Image (cartoon, rainbow, N blue to C red):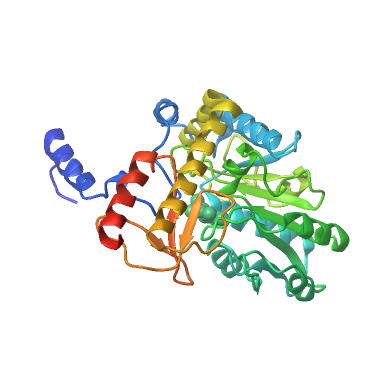
Length: 365
Ligand SMILES: *Cc1c(COP(=O)(O)O)cnc(C)c1O
């Protein structure tokens, strides 16, 4: 840190130079985040100083968080939802496993999840000292149900299913996982970080939400397909007792107990996330999701004409192909198995897809 500060002009010239080094968003085909919706940005700025970690000081903001959880609960067939706004899928998954571990109270607890699970589960298992039992996926990259049953034992505290996998965009057979959860009494967490803001707005999809009696908790990230500002995740739980099992005493705050992972928590992205849902409504979200799915299929068909073979039929807006080199400056990503992966987020418009396909055509046609 310098002894003397600098002028505002110097400061912002410097910052804008750094911002200029970031990638042009319209070339980013690899990210599950997108450009936030303008109403999210406006709401975010409006609530910029709010801290949900001390809710008694921010009653209005805190009620927005409750309303957000209620809206999402309704979207996922749970009119009386509990939960809270997290920093994203990672925190939601850590907290879900923490709940499952606390409630089950086993000596050597293990978690049974698909090998396609997001790497946040590895972090969660490390932090919580849980044995991670990774179940192989089938040819369509969904968890194998027979192998899942074999892996469960009396020390299993949590079962995890993914609704919209990060790498291949498929949905695990959550109804079958729910049956297992009901039969065995094991906590079932659904990671819908990505798919949670996609599947409810499609005409048809694999059931994944609280309408299935075995589902105990669900993670969804408004900062992905919800077009909110970052960081906005939500953890939704069926029983309020599950989440209160995480409460610790908080002597010097306006509330006496806290079940969240972070202490100080931003209200701004919560206002941003709710703003988008209220402004667009189901109708508006359906239009966004239909647009992204249409672009995904245009991409898959277009790539097919240049010899790029699709790996799997996705259920959300993630397309994967057998690997081939991609021309600059396009930013694509690669799965753990080496497949080419493209996420058709709202900023990846029909025009962006066409210009990408043109570049692919120039190289491969
Ligand atoms: C993105 C993602 C996560 C992690 O979410 P962050 O917001 O990056 O912490 C977890 N699970 C799934 C399925 C995801 O797609």
